[in-house]
Image (cartoon, rainbow, N blue to C red; front, top):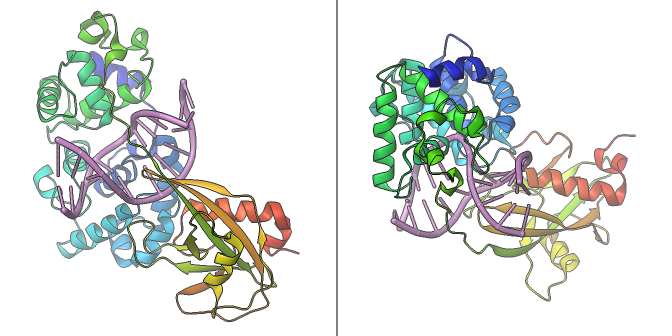
Length: 351
DNA sequence: AAGCCGGGGAC
DNA sequence: GTCCCAGGCTT
């Protein structure tokens, strides 16, 4: 089959493609790859497996440790669900379910991930309908309905099912995803390198970029925060755990507060520390930008030198370069901004 | 069906 | 700047 033949030659050499396929590793890679691009996953996948080499190791760990390992990857519910799934698997004997229907019952495993693990690790003939496959299918079939609609999904699934009559299901799924990621890309598809170009109705139509349908954009919500960055005499930074709210829950960041128009960020940041730690006058650093879902957040870091060794409840002192607690990539941006003001040696606590 | 959750890279 | 990505869950 031309598609799978192409994949055998041009498929990238990715760590989760090593044979034989370990179902646990396939599951970890698929969860990590949800809405996250391959290049960003590869190093984190290696590190995750070094720390949690099998499902028993993962189930034995605390959710806090798993979240810490997930720090910076985003969509932190994935980490909580993966950890919960590992416990379910171990409670059931330690083997992953081998069918898509059973896999689907694990927390954090939806239709896509269930199909991916079932086909890649167990050879079940179920199509995976991720963003890549839906785009490739929409172009190949020249769909006149949105690929993500119920009807579009059915049509693409039917096409993939046909392909599976001529090649192993896992190979077909993987090859289609690889094709979407490297050839039939969102913008400017490289039809000259495509093994399916001969039969592709999207290409024959003369305008393969007509697909996929553009998703409508939503106006981002602009938000401003202030961050109280307290450094003690040895360069350690004060963090506070985010306990409620919809975003970054359970992660550790400098105390944050929403800044309304007219508020003074230095004063508001100082208020966050009232009764917690003793600080000197706050100093502004250059604001950093951070995006979470549809929010565009501008964060004003305020730096406070502090002699205090006290550790208020729900707070902790960390080495800003190696926090050792679950956190967001926002912390790195804030620490960089602070270093630009104070000098890296002060912030790093070295020297 | 639609809205929401992180983050970074491509353009 | 905008858009998307090996999605899942909740409403």
